[in-house]
Length: 313
Image (cartoon, rainbow, N blue to C red; front, top):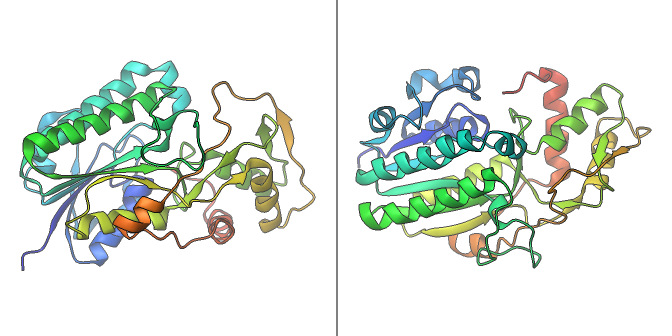
């Protein structure tokens, strides 16, 4: 049986580097496309000799063709993800996230499957909790709109090219090597706790979020790769919510700084009040079973940053 050829865009980034390492461990032939604008080779340094690394940009069709044209499965993770930045630079987010995804979807004509990392941001302010995949889409930022457009292109070219489309709407992903743009509140809380500084909370702290560990996200992607019957759109979250107030106290406790109490600041414009994933469909069809509890994940992360500092990507 031939070795499955898998291309990962953004493979030197936070989620991508964890995924690439696991794919190598499983014996797949892996090609990574990354322009290293936010990712870093140090994230995949231990597997560089085991992969084909292409330094290129998803906005450049030639780079995309070079990296993915002969792949059996394409995993598209490369994206800009800062909501605030997208408001300031909407053209940039259109170029990278929309045009980039368009290029990936078009170039995946020989692939059996295209797996696209979308975002829970496409839902906007939810009208029902937990949020299921059939919830109306109402993006509130250029970032969210770019992800919604990306989903449309992935599904459109699936009809044209015949590949199997899998869209994973990721909720708040956290874990080692994360950038501040991914679940940045966790990074900031840990950073301040280790420095003995109180956490800063925007608003009243009763906002509720669904945090999912990067290792569980990797498992979801692996399941989408290896199960050829999987197709469609899936929420990838823990299915559980936590208030930002509770998160701040939990981080302080794990870091051994229980005396730290939050400082409250003005709420951020456009901040969604409650976001919790309904993962029923992912459990049923994708075999997705999140295994890392928030407390265990935070303990791991505090230990990680205590040892490595905050030289995150």
